[in-house]
Length: 159
Image (cartoon, rainbow, N blue to C red):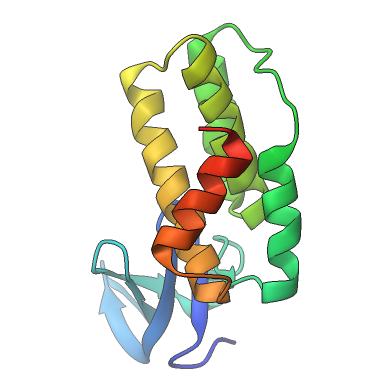
């Protein structure tokens, strides 16, 4: 169980913290809920405690783990899926899985695609979301300021 104040990451929302844990009635279901606050957007959501891990709620990565994320961003990759709809679904599933490495993989693949061919509007939106989630998690892991991390991500992606 997560504690109030702990740094968390939630798929498609990014990094934040547990603001509260309380018994709530949400959509007719009584139960124990986490109230999560996300820094990037100032959004608050409620997640049932008993389904939180199943839905992808996890702790923010440790500082030691950030090297693997930057290594993933530097890896060579080719976007092999020509059908944008299938490519979008594959990337969406990676974002829903929510690990920092999967989010970095989506950022890398979409950056390559953008440089080589451009992105469809929905992919552009996904790229911004994935990048925002990755940046937020790296910030909370304590590996630099926002400007430093933006520059480092761009360097890894060769932007």
